[in-house]
Length: 115
Length: 113
Image 1 (cartoon, one colour):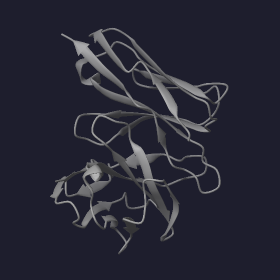
Image 2 (cartoon, each protein chain N blue to C red):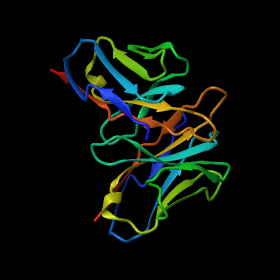
Image 3 (cartoon, chains in turn yellow, blue):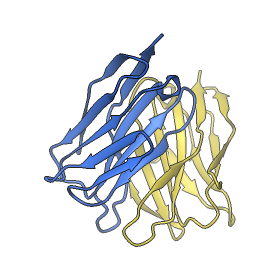
Image 4 (cartoon, rainbow over the protein chains, first blue to last red):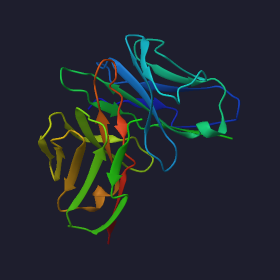
């Protein structure tokens, strides 16, 4: 069964450093998303991406964040200058969006630890 | 912003018991989703509901989309040890370019030996 994959599974970085989190969505999906989950809390929407542009972003997704689809398979989230409060699980999701069906499938996540 | 109120926050049950959890919102959603998350993993979609009043089953799981479109419940029958985890309700409005998922805070299910 096709699935969303993410790398790395765990990333440790120092405050102020740039990180790039990588995702490979399900191959026939056209809609891509990033969510984050601070330890013990709910999953929060960051950004949605379709047709090589951002469709919607949340308040969390400020100027320090960017997304890119550099080739036909990868979807990346970059945090330019990490802060301690960026420590969280980051989940990529993708969706096919057939008529009336909007199911998003999540990857296993990348645990980002900022020290 | 849109918020989902999910209850209960946690449940302790005996193996074999039935489980019921629910979610309410002050906003209307036109899609309700139920996900399960195991420790260290991503949310896994269990059931998706697309029509008000819809009742959908997936094995021992049954979920309903409330008539008002502001609530949903999930039932698990005859619980087994692998049902342990966190269950999240989630809503989508799916209008214009907005298809983001709004998650509840989760119900943590514990099964007593």
